[in-house]
Amino acid sequence: MAVQSAVLVFLWLLVLARTAVIPDECRIIELIDRKLQYENRVMYMSDYFPIDYQLPVKYEEILQCQNISSLQISEGITVDELRFLWGIVSENVLQSIWRVLPQRHPSRSYIDDLQNIFNKLHAGSKLEPSDVINDILERLWLPGGKVKSVAPRNLLDDCWRVLHALYQESCDLCVPRTAPEETLCPNGTVPGLSPAQRPSC
Image (cartoon, rainbow, N blue to C red; front, top):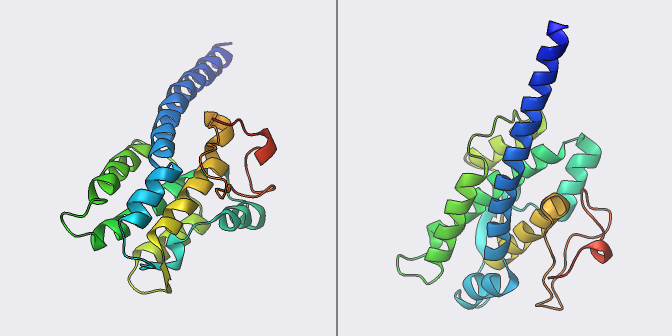
């Protein structure tokens, strides 16, 4: 009886801890989502850069919808691990962009703000990534590796799309109607609702 009571208390504490964490995480995700709105990405990552400017980044920094699908379907990676990977890769992308910005560049404060928000995302996280995730992070952080030139805005476009694929349902994110050419991850990209089911802002 005492063991059953202890188990019930433990499970109750887990529920309380979970309900305490989710809203905090969603508040951070909502902040990131607002910062990554279409107008901001165009202004800070396109208008304020030279025409056709491209940034050399590692292949691991290009995290797109198909990468998320492949990791979950082929490798069995959990949603929590995908979120963890997305956060780490996004932080790395922001650092890569920040490093090329001159001191007085108008996009510098925007990237600073995003970095500060992302720094809070995994604070206190106790997730133990799988070997697959650790291998990706090792390639991301070690010198060398394959490099590709990508427009800064494309990097943040991918960041925003994957954010919606991973958090739209659990954090009740809406889809802005500000740009007709704006697209989210296609149907079947996991997890999340189909675009037709997603609420519009």
